[in-house]
Amino acid sequence: MTRPISNDAEFDELQQLTLEAKDRLISGEGRSGAHYELMALLGKFGYNAMGREEAVQIGQRLCDEYLAAEANKVASRITGKVKRNRKRKLR
Image 1 (cartoon, rainbow, N blue to C red):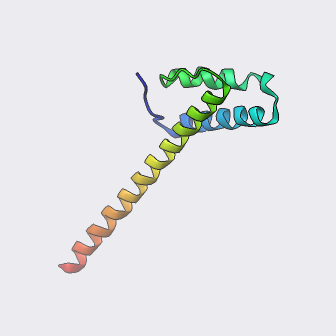
Image 2 (image 1 turned 30 degrees about the vertical axis):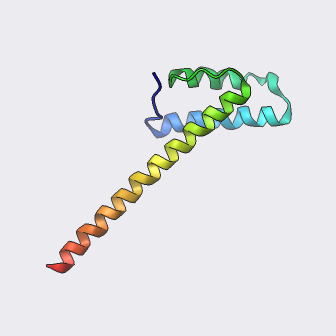
């Protein structure tokens, strides 16, 4: 069973390992072991990557989903404040 990233510390760790593994993949230095660390971390979220490329793709997708969820939380807070302020002005 998979789970999303639940806090900033998990996001930071996943993003760092994803970027490092992606950099090694692009540069051709695949023997750094970064992708093994990334695969282990992805396993904690319930994902099993079958290779370096897939590990980077999954890591990037999880990071993107976390950022989108955080942006939605902020937008919801802002929208809620605007609605409350409008109600106050109407009184």
